[in-house]
Length: 212
Image (cartoon, one colour):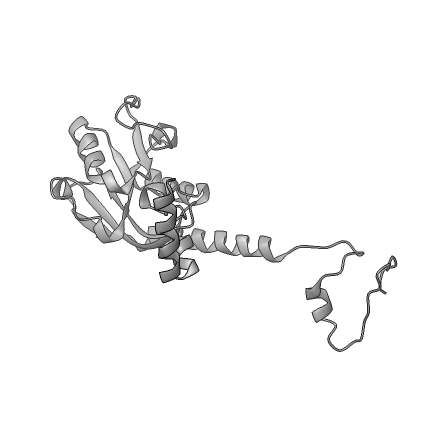
């Protein structure tokens, strides 16, 4: 860094709050970094396989960090069920439609129907799902598929409930893990002492015995 850049940053700090200054250095959460928790993915995959009579062994996931879906292998009979980078979703759909590769993809609900060159060649499963992805981002999620293209859009209360129930279950499990912690008997914390507000207790510097 040059001295000019540093002095400029210092001047900017004076005119902004500390939080605003720190915020610009934090990694930004984008929809392209929304990796799906495995529990949620499995619920969706199971629904897709049952709905469209797909052998789970034929399901493939070409979207992973560092991967290139255009160069991936698509064996005969395969079906793509995955959460793609949302910023290039239209290009991905065009790629699969042109090559006759069946797919069921995650999509942001607000823009799921915005593919100008693809919307009338796919079905859009519009759901009221708020999925909490691995990066912590919460995204209203629907789905787009090459199956049943005679239907342009439909709702699915069943899929919505399955996903939302799984999201809630994961949230509750995370809360339990964070809140439950058993300390050894010889450990004393401020939180423990707060619960003794009706009793007078003291801890000496060389206290070695357990309280009864």
